[in-house]
Every structure is written in structure tokens, then in C-alpha cells.
Length: 193
Ligand SMILES: Cc1cc2nc3c(=O)[nH]c(=O)nc-3n(C[C@H](O)[C@H](O)[C@H](O)COP(=O)(O)OP(=O)(O)OC[C@H]3O[C@@H](n4cnc5c(N)ncnc54)[C@H](O)[C@@H]3O)c2cc1C
Image (cartoon, rainbow, N blue to C red; front, side, top):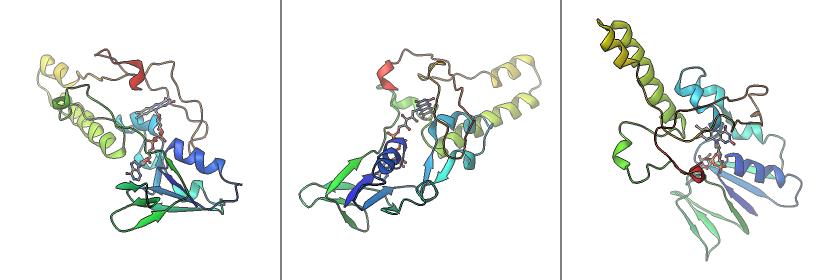
């Protein structure tokens, strides 16, 4: 029994690689959909809807007979007992692949988070989208140019270089490529990406 934690790019690629292996695979993710993160920008700026960048994991792996998909959140890994621990069960494994991704960082400025949410999941994208659209509404209702300009001024921080574009279309976005760019207002390390 092989267990894969996480159905992001890493976990899904691992599952695909094991497609023809003589092994039972259990893929566990806290969500039942795979999120195509490179297009989160388009959701955050109202160019795409959340459903356009989320694909059910079971749909992606349909036809992969040796793989079972479970929606659950791993809380711990019991190395001695060789099992993944969730709130309601223990899932045993012979081999474990951990592909649970990463979180954004504020490099010691955690107090920035309430003003500038990260952009790693749909909830965060919707939160940013709401702020952007409300700012446009306030600009529309503004009575002076200065007030309007302040509503339309925003700063996006992070490190996505224009030449780093996604090359592989997601299963439900064939032919649609991200051209995400962002203004880098603070010097972040390249390795943070
Ligand atoms: C806004 C944005 C734009 C990007 N643009 C590009 C780009 O243009 N080009 C490029 O190459 N890369 C880009 N990336 C980076 C790329 O998306 C990531 O490198 C990639 O998603 C990492 O894959 P992963 O499988 O390691 O992790 P993730 O894709 O983050 O997947 C991790 C999975 O693990 C699950 N998980 C986490 N914790 C648990 C738990 N405790 N229990 C169960 N499940 C759990 C999550 O739900 C998730 O499904 C971008 C990322 C972002 C956020």
C-alpha cells in the first residue's frame, strides 16, 4: 500500500507515475479538488471563476484502477506504526509520499497579512477579488479625482517573474496559459518561489 499526501502537482504526478505499478495507491487531500494555482491571479482579479481552476481529483484519476482518493486532512504521520493520522482514522502505508505543498511567507512581517492576504487557495483569491471589486465601486462613487485615484491605487508584492510562465495546461484548461506578472515591491529571494 502506497499513500500519497496531497493532490497538487507533486501528488498527482506521483499518482500518475504509479499508474501501472503493482501497488494499491491511496491519495489523500484535505480538498476533493485539484487547484491549478498558477491561475489564482485570474480568480483574484475576476477574470476567471473559481470553478474554472478547480478540477475534482477523482475526475483527473478516473480510470486509474489502483488508486483510491480520500478527502481528509493529515494531522500527523506515525512513523513507528507506519500510518497517516487524521481526525477520524489512521491510514496505514508501506510507502509514503508527502506532497503537501508550501505556504507563503511574510519574512518576519506577519502583521502585513491582515492588509495583504496570501494567494495560495480559492478563499484567499476570493478575498482579494472582493477587495479589488469594492475598490472599483468606491472609485466609481468618488466625488473627486484625488479620492478616485486613491481607490484605484494598489500594490502587489511577491515574486513571479514575467518569463516564468506555466507551460503545462491543466486537465480542464487546455490551451489556456497563465501570463501572470506582478509588481515586486520588496526584494524577496528567488528561492522563495
Ligand atoms: C499564485 C500562484 C501562481 C503560480 N504560478 C506558477 C507558474 O506560472 N509557473 C510555475 O511553474 N509555478 C507556479 N506556481 C507554483 C506552483 O503552483 C507550485 O509550485 C505547485 O502548485 C506546487 O505543487 P505541490 O504539489 O508541491 O503543492 P500544492 O500544489 O500546494 O499541493 C499541495 C496539496 O496538498 C494538500 N494538503 C496540504 N496540507 C494537507 C494536509 N495536512 N492533509 C491533506 N492534504 C493537504 C493541499 O490541499 C494541496 O492540494 C504558482 C503558485 C501560485 C500560488
